[in-house]
Every structure is written in structure tokens, then in C-alpha cells.
Length: 326
Image (tube, rainbow, N blue to C red; front, side, top):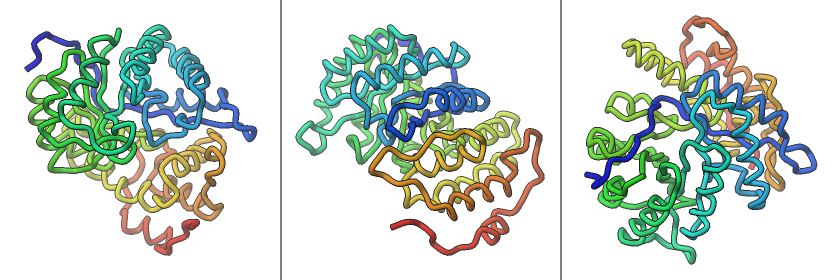
């Protein structure tokens, strides 16, 4: 257990992860960002900005990243808690970012579990030292972000040890590893050390096992909010109904990558996030239309409670052929 008490997040449920909208000339489209933030706030319990590594903010300069975080935090207007990204392989640079995040109004920071700067997995001792240095210096609580690929993939014992660090208040887990998630919820969340958030696909399982919720970009947040609402109301059948759609969305279009699919989906809500940052391409017109039809079929544009539909029927209407760009 922690040797000192730390403030756990007061929220649970959905953390909406902001996508970065661009004009054609590569500048950030702040008008679209405001519309996106307002959309997220309708469904989410907290919002993360420039905090998820599988996102386009990583294409920005440090100054552009700071400007994005400052302006976006102002746009939130304290309606929900704000999580800003302070990931950096250097603890010193991460601490500098943490101080900046606190200055512009962050409630928490999110820090990726890093690979070694020269590549390869860090040891348990290295990760503990890394997060201890950042957490002890950060003016706001720290969310430890596990995302294998851009970041480290520590074993379960290391993750549990990280939850002992004072000022580490939560975890964001992106592995979708059911065995790991269930044990981490038991050891970390139910053990009282920190909150445990996952991602879209294991959202309902996370809630059932006692975890806090999940982080996801919009409009995945709109499905997630319905899962959480039904779960909180004790309606397990409705929660399962909405969770099933994550088996199709965004997975059917996954070859493009998550940001292009979600940007295309948001266009169907009249939020034009622009194309992916060059040289990466947007999805094809046919797949864009398919995404819109999927969202329409499941009733995601309806304000009230839509009529339930069969996922099998939705799949059949869309067609099964692979239409991805290669």
C-alpha cells in the first residue's frame, strides 16, 4: 500500500481522448477542436488532451503541443476534469511538462510507460525510478499509461509496484489483455491504490470486474456512455447490447488506424476534423459512407433511446468485403 495517501480521481466511466484536427495547411483547426470538445463533454466523465500516444499530437512541435493543451483546456471551461499529456522519455522533461500542464489548468497528467531511449524494455527498477521522480515532483496527480508499441510492456508485478508510488492516482491500460486487466483491477483498483481504466473493447468487462471505466476517442465515447449508463442502472442486457458494437466499430476499418476512422466518423456528426496529418491518408469515400451507415443503423444519431437492431443484420447490410486502402 502507499506510504502516504494520494487523491484518487473523483470520476469514473468514460474519459474522452481528444483527436487533433488540422487545416489543409497543417495548422491546428481550433474551431473544429471546440466542436469536438463540446461533443466529448456530452458523454464523458473526463477528457484527455494530447495524452494518448497513438494520436497525431505527436506530429507537433513542443510549442505547438503546449499551445494545443492550453487552448483546449480553456475550451473545456472546467465542465469536466482535464487530463493533459506529459509523456517524455526524460523524467526531467516530463516534469517540466507536468508543471506547464498544472499552470494551464490540468487536473491530472498522463505519462506513458516509456521504452528505453535506445529501444528495449526497461527493468522494474528503471520504471519505478522513472515514475517516482516524476510523481514526486508533479504538482498534479499522475496517470500511468500502458500502451505496448509506442511504450513499454511491463509484467504484472511491475505494474502493481507502480501503483504503490505516491501521487500515481490511476492507470490507463491499452493492452486489451483480459488476464492482465482482471488481475490489475483486483490488485490495484480493488486494493485501493489507484483507479484502473482500460479502452473500448474491454469496457463492460472492466466495469463488471470493478474497474473504473475506459478511455476512447469520439465518437466511440457515445457508445461507451450508453454502456456505462446501462451498467450504472443495473441493466446488464442493455449494457451488453451497446458493448457488442465495439466488435464492429472501429475494428471493421482498423487497417487505416484509429485516428483516421474516428475523424471520418465525426464528419457524420458535422464535426470536420480534416484529414490525417501528412503523409498519412484519409479513408476511402466508400468506407466513409459505410461508417456513416453503420452509425445510422445502430441509432447513434438519435437523441432518445433508439430501437434495438441486430449486429448480424447491420453487418449484412454493410457487406463483408474488405475495402481498406493498402
